[in-house]
Length: 178
Length: 178
Image (tube, rainbow over all chains, first blue to last red; front, side, top):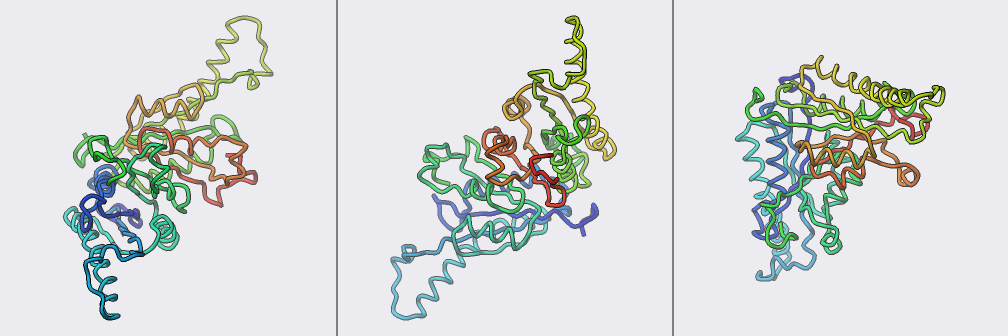
């Protein structure tokens, strides 16, 4: 029970890795949405909120991440999965550390699959009070070529959703990067 | 300055009248979104937030609301505008009273025009940290026939937007009603 009475507000956040720097770095929009939530919603009321941090890993269909590895036994393939999982956990570590610094409760976990579908599935399972997603803030033309997880979740997640766009200053040279 | 440091988080809320009970009653979705914000976001941190309550009145194009009135001089027409404004103010009174009971700062004002456009215009002018809008939670088929302000604002408002749907228990017999 929160100090201000009642159960804490459970905020689910979907976070992903940077497309520029790769694991374990968080994407610009994930970090932005996370810091925005702390600054604008949680503020000093750290006992009033609990952050539920979900990282969805794309299944590594073709093994491109492991092209420089040698595969000689089934054991090696177990290793790949393990390595990917570790990468995801290091990403979550960044957010969990920040929560602990600030003193806000959190839970973090990794799932595999199609991010937009898994996020909506996890919303149903976990039933947060609302979902925060970072957004690259792409224009309609750019959206034709890339998936926009935030837009899908805003439409389909079974809880209120707030999408936090990157600021102009945070946007990298190629806005599809994150 | 808020007790927890920094400026309070400025939450803009668009509220409208009930389509069933009319003025000065607030719509089900407005009341729901307002109470949700207090319970889930503001919580006990009343000094950390400021609510900016906007009510947009549709221009009464054909004077249907005043069909039982007599018009005999230009003065009468002034009166109509005045009456509509009063109705809008009584609607805001409900929300302002609740804010005062709870001890959260607020500002409230009425604007005339097309709700979705005026809300987006006011977001640009006032620059809130985010916008809360109530939503009837209509299905795709129902949306064909009625405007969905929440969807328009989610796409076009120049700040983060969170749409709060009515619960099944709050939904009236005709879900287009509010």
